[in-house]
Image 1 (cartoon, rainbow, N blue to C red):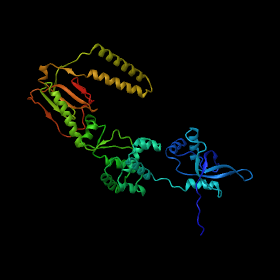
Image 2: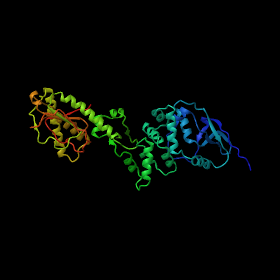
Image 3: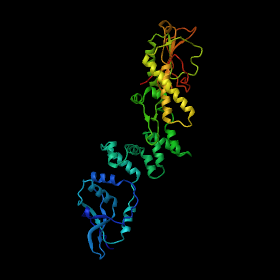
Image 4: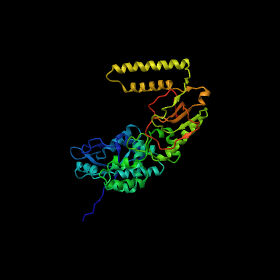
Length: 418
C-alpha cells in the first residue's frame, strides 16, 4: 500500500495571495471579517491557507496564488494591512497544491470539519473563567456579549448528570437552560427524575417545579426588605439568565417573612414613640380591619407657597392630559407614564400625614403594615371605644393575600422605603 505524503506549509508573501473563484464559500455567515481580523491581531493566524499557483494562458506560473480555502482569513489579513497593522508582504503559512479539483478541495475544507459541540464551548469558557479571565475579558476576546458569556458559564455549571443527558440528546438546550434557574445539582436531578415520569417535560414545567414555593422578587415583602438584606441573611435568589425573570425568585420564604416582620417592628417602635395609646403591626391587614373604629379629626400640614404652586401646576397638567386623552383615539405610551407620575405626585400631597393634638394621640392608635408597592404604610388616628389600653399586638401569622392597598384614608401615610 502506498504511503500518504502530506504537504508541508510554506510561507508566501501576503501580496502574492488573491481570492480564488473556486472558493465555494459565497454567503457571509458566522464571525465577521472585522472580528476575525481582531482575533488574528490578538493571537495570530491559527490555520494555514490552502492555495494553488496561478498560471497564464500557456500554463506558466505567474508568481501569484489563488486561495481556495481560507478566503475569510485572507480578507481579514488584507484588512489588517489596510489598517497599517500588518506589512503587505508579511509571510503567510500556506498549503500549496497543484493537483485535484479546486472546488472539491474548497468544499471538503468547509464540510469535513465538525462544528464544535455547544457544551465544549460552555466548558471552554468556564475553564478560561477559572483561570482568571473576567466575563468582560472573555466577551471581548470572542466577540460576544457579556450576557452570552454569563449564560454559557451558567450552563457549564449545571449538574454533570444533566450535561451527560444533553450530550446524548435526551435533554434539549431549552430544557437545560430551564434547569439553570437553580445552581443546586441535587434539586436539578430531583426535578428531572420527577418530570421524567411525567407527560410534560417542557422548559415551563421545569421552571415551575424549581421555583415552587419561592417568592417573586416583585413581591411586596421582597421590595420592603430588599434583596441585599435578604442575601446578607443567607437567602438564595434563583435567577433565570435566559428569560425575563423580573429580578428572580427568593427561595427562602420563611427567612423573607422573618426579615420583613423584624423591619416592620423596628419601624413600628419608632412610631409608637409619638405617644399613641395602642398599635397593631402586620405585614398585611385583612380588608375591613378599620371597620367600627372612630377616626381623629386631624388637620393636614399647610403647604408652603412654593409647594402650593407646584401642586396647582401638577393638577393643571394632569387635567389637560386627561382631556386630551378622552378626545384622542390613540394616546402615546409615554403620556400615560407621565400621567401616572402626575397622579402619584398629587396623591402624595392629598394623603400627607395629618397633625393631631397630643391629648388626642394619647387616646388613639395606629396600624403599621406594608403597602402594595413595598413601602411602609402607617394608618394613624383610629379610636377604639370601650376597649382597654393596649400597647402593642404583633401579628406573626403568614401573609394574607388580602390587601388594603386600594383604600385611601386621610390618616394613611405611605413612607418611602428608600
